[in-house]
Image (tube, rainbow, N blue to C red; front, side, top):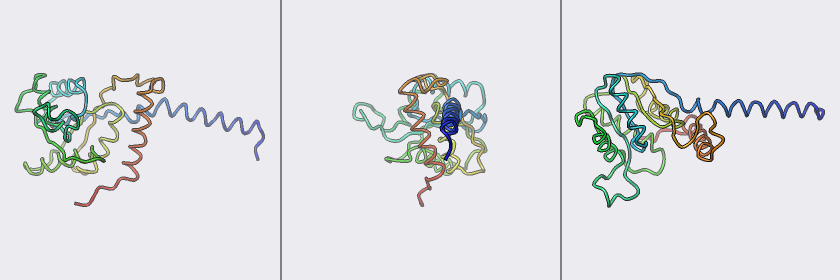
Length: 207
């Protein structure tokens, strides 16, 4: 058994390790590894500032098309003409100035789990039906969701497609001090657990 001084040293070492992890885990989750060219994808549930970032990305680089993913609208659907998040967000992009021939909504089917995977699978099937997968695919998403998004798209698209990811900062909290707000703690903890599930537990369903 360690002495009380040894036990205290172990606790301090653990505390320092946890503190260091807390300072770096958000940067690990909110990864940006942009690979311009090919097609650009924006997750339809993202807020308008993320859509603006996707438009700016299209203006900086040459893309074949901007795809919008997303499943059925779950609240207020009877009040709008759009039935899916993908279609609603595509219409928003047009209002923000994107050319109609550049924006393509690719709705995902209704599902209660693994929604990012379902969105990636719907996009893959759409692209294959139109002639094949692109050599490059750059994805725009929100903050700490980025690493999990790229992982799940990689499971769907495979190694033949070079996948880039752009994490637009989440405006609901300070990414450098995420532990100081409830929104930051909820996001980082939930995304950490979700990434661990996607990385080590999730298995794509057989089709």
